[in-house]
Every structure is written in structure tokens, then in C-alpha cells.
Length: 195
Ligand code: GDP
Image (tube, rainbow, N blue to C red; front, side):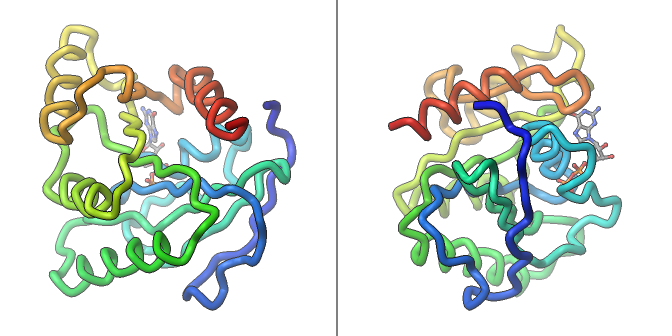
């Protein structure tokens, strides 16, 4: 798939604004600042369609991007920024729950994890919620260019152990800076969209 045309359909503040369409949807989740906007921009070949934010947790909308009329990226607000209250955590859980239950056209969930650090408690919670809903997300480790080669093995193990990933192939190493992992992701998208 070659991606040239991408439009933002809507920045939804509630389920009433979810678009009505048949496009398969790919949900993107990650804690604030994990590099989610950079990931989207890299995949869709844009510099700044998805806003890269320096203010963690500010965007509370769910953004729907129509990609080539082939699929839709659904960008949830970043979770787990510092000082987040228990109520905010519950609200985020509700948001995921509501979205997953309402969307028959949900094809796949991608959870982004910062490769530099151990998955946070929020990362693990979100992963568990998804598993409880019967969803095994594809894990994309971001910012790999910031990790020394020597630490790769250790960091991969850290993520696999925390999120109970059994096969290293289910963990994609990605960098928006070097674009490593982009081809691999495009291949996965091609495969799941063709099924
Ligand atoms: P978001 O809050 O998850 O949407 O994160 P952003 O995409 O806004 O990225 C947060 C910060 O990390 C920004 O300063 C980005 O430039 C930086 N960043 C994102 N991805 C990468 C990456 O792959 N490598 C490096 N070195 N920096 C990255």
C-alpha cells in the first residue's frame, strides 16, 4: 500500500461523533509522549498531520484519520501522564471500553511502548484491559534510536516479560527518526487489511 492521501475525518469528543463508515479501524494507544503522533506521521508520510505535542495529556479527543479510503487510524488520547488521578484513569478505561464495544469495524489495536524504559503500570493496565476484552494488541516499541545496541536484548526482554509477549516477532521495534520498523509495519498493515 502506498500512502499519499490522508484526511482527518473528525476529532470526536464523544461516541456520538464517531464516524459512520465501513472502513476497518486500527486503534492506537500509548502513554503521553510515547511518540504516537510521530508514529502516525511516519506511517502516513506526513510531517505534522497528527500533532506532536509537547503538552502531555492535553488532547482529549479521539481523532479519526481516513487513510487512502482503505482504513482508518483511530488515535486515542495519550494515557498515564504524571499526576493523573484515579478518576482520570477510570475515564480512560471507560473510553477504551466504550470504543471497543461500539466498533464492529475494529480490525486491530496497536499499543505503543517507549523502548527506553520498562513498561509503566499504566502500560500494563491498558494491556490487561485489552486482554480482558479479548484483544491482543500489536506492540510497537518506540524511540529505538535512543537505545544503545548493547541494551537492545535487555529492553526487549523487559517489554516481553511485562506484557507477557511470547514471540519476539510480536514486538515491532520502531523509530520515527530513523524510520526503522516502518517497512515491517507497512507489511503487517497490508496483511491484516487483505485478510
Ligand atoms: P505523543 O505525545 O505520543 O503523540 O508523542 P510525540 O509524537 O509528540 O513525541 C514526543 C516526543 O518524542 C517528541 O519530542 C518527538 O520528537 C519525540 N519522538 C517521537 N518519536 C521519536 C523517535 O522515534 N525517536 C526520537 N529520538 N524521538 C522521538
